[in-house]
Length: 362
Image (cartoon, rainbow, N blue to C red; front, side, top):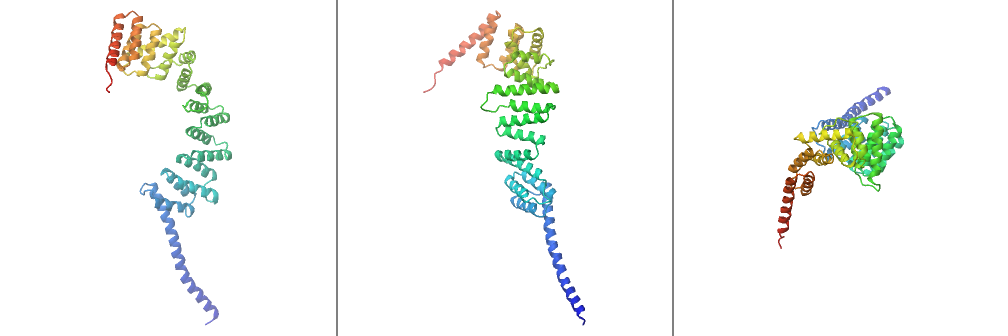
């Protein structure tokens, strides 16, 4: 037999042996890859619970068979199931390895930011956000997100600084001023007085109103001014955003408080207060918080019958409020309704006598 035939025979024999082996190995590999994809799809469709073995399978697949799209899907699944430590490990591995098929580095870094925040690792999250914004300083939405993270983690001044940076980058967008105002208005303890933050919020809302007038912003401004006891400014703003409905509680209370503090009042302010007080007296669904301030403003304006009706309505809701009943008794005495005033005074005296006559048990 020629030598060439012998060589061919041997090669043929080797091929016959190798091909099945390759097929078997390929089948095993592709079976595992297929199994990983099946697990991922079943988890996404809520047909499979995210248990520890499943998590381990998905983690392994992110280092092996899965492409960028599947890795992103796995990370979101783990984050949604509060597997924050596992997500952190995968992300840091992907960032350090820098394989060509991995997710974009900015996307990975952003996932590190959000995962750390959801896990409650605020310092870690803040560091990641800073790193992201150093690399992508034009990421306005992420800067807004970062400012919110700072605020929620108790760093109000740093949050305000980020919102002010957003305004510097987008000075013509009223929404940026609204975000700053909201952040400054939050009740967060710092080493600065609350008046400092009220001033920031007030200026931000005023600027936002210049760019885009809006009734809700007027309401926010009224409340801020009221908190700062700027009662004349409250009246100036409110008279510019009429008509006011009784259901707009914050506006009504701010108006009533301002009326009791400011003198003299202009005719439009007096008429506006009278109209709101009448609405309150006629309404069955009036908020209790509105009744007291409106009754006192009506008393100041000497709308005595209106004030009396509002006070009576309030007493029905707060019958055990001794300070309120004493206030009403004094009011009734001042408007020469002595008999009704005496009724309240007598009831208050009886209650006091009954309370003092009850001795505590020993």
